[in-house]
Image (cartoon, rainbow over all chains, first blue to last red; front, side, top):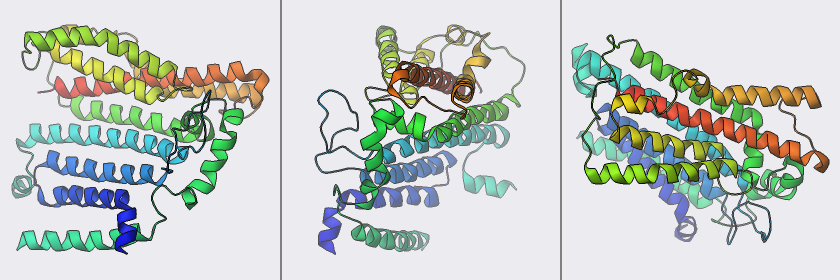
Length: 117
Length: 237
């Protein structure tokens, strides 16, 4: 068990990162900090999936002169590129909503906003 | 009390995840299921079927072209939503006279001005060579967007708005979806499939041209979207 975990330490690191992001999302009341927490969670998932495609001693999957196998799995990388773009889009939208909230209510602390209702 | 509850929750979340990680095939093993099915096929046939030496570009633009078309639509939609959220509340414009957000030091101004053309050149290289080297439209577009953001920080608002020409700006923002649709329709006209590419080597030049056009469209669109989002957020006080 411990041996298997040590072998997969890269995956365990992404679990750790996921928990850090979750902690930030739950405990912080500042909305921007909450969304940075969400971004950390997204990053941990990206790191995990890209790490799944790694092969021992593999090269970047770019054919051409001098390229020799083994190559790293190209599929996770392209999927994660899509994921990163979507993450950027959601972050941009969330930040603009926070700006709007700040303008309307004068605060971006979640607990103060709740009291306002 | 609350702190203890949070820690308990985190442990409860972490334990099953860590257990699952221990059960996965070892890191870097070439026999793992993720590596032996689709990925192996792409590595073997990617260059001849899809036409780009960079297999990641093959997957993004050819094998999963529809996915990427949806993706460029997502960033365009996000920009539209940001504009809708922030522009709705804007008072009438006294824009154009405001100095930069924080007056930058001479060092920052000088470095940004020297670096900007070189960085732009690197971005063009990344976009144009996305099919044979690491990079591509999204990556290069992000670099161009970063250059715009850096320049916005040192220039006055009036000069910063002139970085992107005003009249074609709306078209440039939608460049990625538009170029994607055009290339898709070209494929429909030539090969009877939306986003169809030539499958044989004789038409390799046309295939490369289509891939590079897509990369340029994605790069221009991505850069304009990032610059627009940043400017909309920054100019809105």
